Length: 358
Image (tube, rainbow, N blue to C red):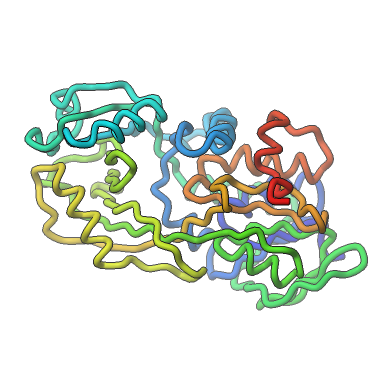
């Protein structure tokens, strides 16, 4: 066999798993695109908000905090602000409690974000525990760690066939054929497609598009210290980025796996929701793009050996949580593959297992 572990997908899930599994054996990573992290990983809002998501997601995110803080420069101060209108009290209160925000006055909110419109914004909350993630630093760090232990990380290696062998697998890709004892399926929006190629039962993953636009700093203001802002129910968000603002309608539109692009109409609707809450209009876009956030049927990550084919390992369904969960998710994958007792609790491990789908 060419490798012990062949990882399909070079996004944050696959490359973090490569770093962990390189401690256990020979690793090959096959990434379809020209560069690592081309799809969802490169189009992330890049925020570490550990209280965001379903309970199992929160468990993974909270368990990732120590790793993030052990790496200089990966996390940076940001903060997260929830703003709502007077007719949206119920949704506002739900998010305020679920994400452990502190209630603040509109006047306090405007000291942090002076463009908030006091005639529209009636409710505000703030959480200081949300932090920026330097996604490139994180990805490159995992890649260096994996390569430092001998892992092969190949780009332009789209997989076209997966064949079961005695004692392993043969994977045919644009970069050649490779054999390995185990496949780790970290193919993002394409995870079910990889399962079909391997003759493994699919689990019903669903990719959803999310569009984003970069706009100039409103009013020419310095936005570098502004928190990320969003509306109740996450029907829009805005986040400082490189001296500008990223604004998203935070939509979830069902898509087939593909290299996603922004929908202009949907983007306009999201920008209108943002504009309603502020005093500065959007006059032009600097750029726009979209990514696919892929969820399992219960919107929780899937980490574990396939129930029927134990040499096929799922590392999938990161949704919008891939970066903030990757330290704990990749460690769990290595623990399970290496036969070690997981650092995470047994209940959480069961919540993440593909066995929950029968």
